[in-house]
Length: 263
Image (cartoon, rainbow, N blue to C red; front, side, top):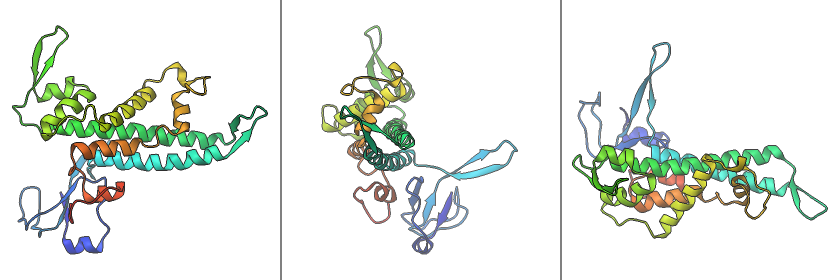
């Protein structure tokens, strides 16, 4: 663990929104993972080690993976949308009245940003759900019907390994939070839209080509703007399930309401 006092925090920039961190609620003596005593309000950030090929041990900042994926998804989405608008503004009008994009590099840069945005947005939802599974009591179980039609009880490890992401969202999230399932709500519709686009991009069909301008390919849908809200959809889902999960620095980076002064 590494830490900074409140006075140091005032003089320096706030922690990176992707960082796994907290602020101490009270004065804390040295001991455990803390080498020195720290006053209330000190920033404590999680680090983890890696052994490089030459044997050197390097300690690096540990991401809060939900925040990391959301912040990066939004960054890619915002840039992708700017590139999409520039791409569509730079066209050649054909004799038929159709338009052809002139700047191929711009189009491919747009695709790169939007694909990244979609994959990271979905990864954020998956990371949250797996974290919720991990935080369940050790004795937690969930009933599930197996392939034979028999009802079996799943423990935490089986929930993590044997439940799909939609099943975790529908069944594990309510078990972990005490809230109703979002299934059947606008948030479920956002999840289904995000999942459909993510699956289509990961499991590309027809070599990603369509000659139908209406029933276009997945990349045609990206150019049409169908992925522009993917990061916002993921943020909305995370906020609905766990309203206090994200730190305030992450919330600032994502443009959502701050909860309290030092989160």
